[in-house]
Length: 120
Image (cartoon, rainbow, N blue to C red; front, side, top):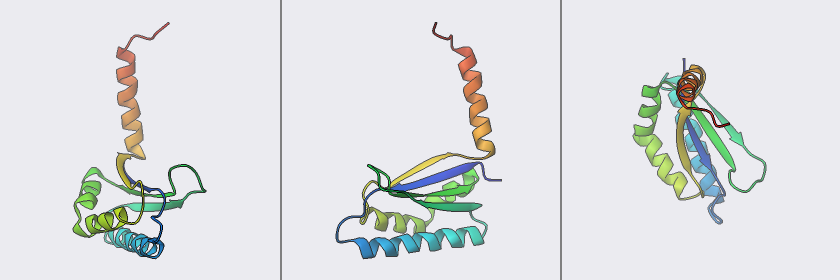
């Protein structure tokens, strides 16, 4: 079961690059769809956000640590990332935890917090 995730977020589309941004977005969906179909990732979600000051949308890719590392090292994924960086502002890739990974991280946090004295 997936315990890791890759958050792929982006901000505004560069003016004059809207059509290319749509192409790159569709290419990303195709890449992730093939990866899911081939079992290279466990799944992914896509969200488009209401207008705000920083984040227009994101994709969350779920898998094991090895699967997420393989995604980041995949040449097709890397090319798509370069293409995306040319048409959107604020492109970011952030690795994190999901599902059972959250429970393990919180257990480590609780253990560490127990070793720190609490302020009065």
